[in-house]
Length: 563
Image (cartoon, rainbow, N blue to C red; front, top):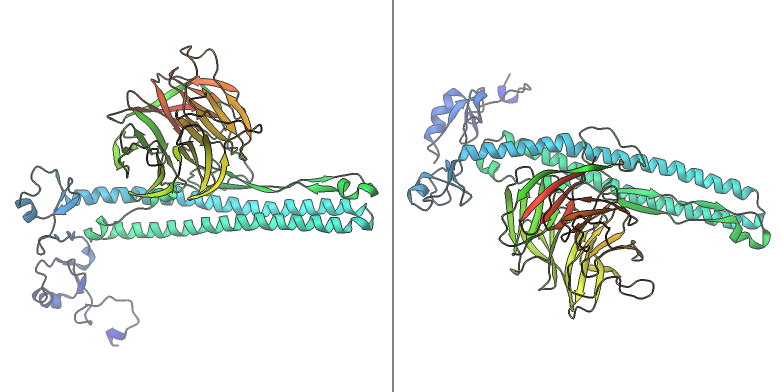
């Protein structure tokens, strides 16, 4: 039998194409039989052939070629220049007094990072997306059943009426179908987006598997990870069913008494999903678990930012990383567990950022008060999103729907308003109450903003010495003006503001060196003290840990305050 046409799955020599492979050139990625080894080594421009037994292939590391010295391989890595270097580069004194490491050590560290991120994708992120997809499918099935029950209730009620109400029955059932179809389509689209992300995650895993197995160090060093984009889980869409309210039969008031459907809606819950490591689906329609306040909040860790000037703002990128900013033009990303600086971004204008936030996609957003802009940082490149005319942006937050809420002052400091943006498009303005009175103080004093789980918009208004809370439509719900006795018995001085999964509203009070916790209706619950000194910016992570910046000692405290 001709071995070249044999159906057996045998690997042949790449040169003679006849003999069974016995050797492998790790430099050229060529399979060889023993007889062809000499021919391969003697031909071609490559001099540093690494021929090994076939079973030992990919065991020889292929060092990157030096871009400055074509015939040299880079076996060292310059940490200051963040590049592999060869022996000729080192001899040129270009890297004198630079910190050097072996490329293999850098590669080992890179592989460790890739393995951890691959494991996170395999064990946490991918199972969580599968749970989310199952949850959405369960909700769709439940919708079918409950809308069916609703339709049946209307039909039974309609059988007791005369023929004059047939038209109304058909109209109401059509409305139900339209509402159901709208919600089903919304959930279907949501499911497709989730399935698309799961497909992307699996591709990312495959790419990481290839990177781990390769011996081409240039390719391995060029691997970039997108894991951070998948850590930000999709928002949970919860269909809210309409209600059918029947009325008594009365011929003259037929339309009124028969009943009407209340509007249906879909609410978005930014705390609805959390990372899991199992395939078990969450219970359909379940709410976030109830967590009780601790009698004694506990400081988990303290991060020293070493800011030259004051430390004002903090925003969670994930449960492991936070962004901070202060009185200079630099925004810093820190590892929470190690307390180490991971990255620094300087603002485009050189001005200090008035505030920072993290979008649902994990991008950093900041406001430039002097340049009247809202900017976004993508892959360390800054892009202007919004440029205002006659208004100056103060604080910004990202909502559960993906919109941005920006609170801003007029150039003459005689007006203040909240504007909702979808991308760079203005969608909503909130400025006055039902009596056309300003909701917020008319000054340039600092104001912070956040969205609560119930979609209320909460503003910490330093000039008014109050927390002002309006509903999603912009209607005033309440003002919180502090609680007595305060820890230092001083007036309420609200600074940063945030919320948690329990719809608590948390506000820093730098006058009393504490954080106030109130419920979603404005009732005072407790203070967090924990040795805080001039607390300023606040944020919470997905586990309801609180992060507090301390303006004068330039530290961030991580505090556990819920059970």
